[in-house]
Image 1: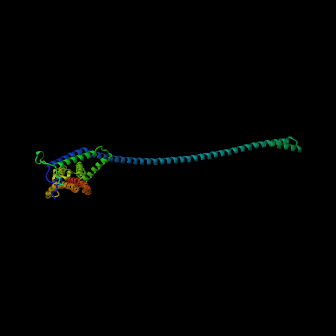
Image 2 (image 1 turned 90 degrees about the horizontal axis):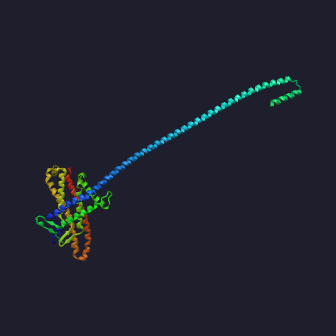
Length: 169
Length: 242
């Protein structure tokens, strides 16, 4: 078999193409650095920063929300307690008032009753006095009438009935 | 078989200046393709990436990870453009030779620039020089020189040999893989398909497709390896002794 020389670049030292290789690679490196890698890396960096900022912000707002929720819960609790206290107070006040009213009513009725009893006693006294006076004058009149007239039995009857009539009036 | 390279020896009458025209041409074509792809990929950049930008960002993240594995990201981030460009350039170069090969006369014109040892060695020498440059720049001259007598002074010759060996292996590994791939492709393509045209041409399709698939795989892996080794050598030079 003959010599296998594919590419045939195995031997020799082609300085020229080596220089081409070196220079073109360096140019490629510089150009890509300027036109490709720099913008690409910048965008990636920006995104990373953006994401980390967003995470920070999210963290901050989460904390804020947590605090707000806690405050709200506390306030709600306080408000509820206050409401409870107000209701309690109102109930107590209502009870107190009820008791007061009842007591007042009882006192008033007591007073009225006493007054009524007193009135009755007074009236009774007055009536007694009036009756006494009447009885006295009546007996005087009866006595005088008896003395005035000679009384027959028939007259006596007549007189008695007259008196009875008069008494009945 | 028996393709030659279009050589332009003693160019401009300068004795040592030889051009392998196909390699030079393919180097430039490959660079242009890489440039176009990368610039297209980083146009109309948005905070919410769309298809092409996503691909580019995946690439960036991939290279970032390779660098991050090799060294501290703080020192490593300045090598990101270098790593990206190296990877893209070698990857595209490897792919160019897999897709088609153009032979004009007896000369092979369209191939991978990386199937030329001179090219790959140029890249590897450049990489090793860069690692030394950054070693001095980042650690300072004293620390850099101390690196050669680590861990003990009598290892100095070995450390020097290592530099040369790294350069050679880095370049020749890439060259060998890609060159072998192209040899086999052209063997399959020409020897097999060309022998008895109508029948063997069809028969050659199966090994052709299989080997092209394999070459794609090799090309990707080799560009990855080149990138990783570059970053590993770089980290040896720029990080303080552990």
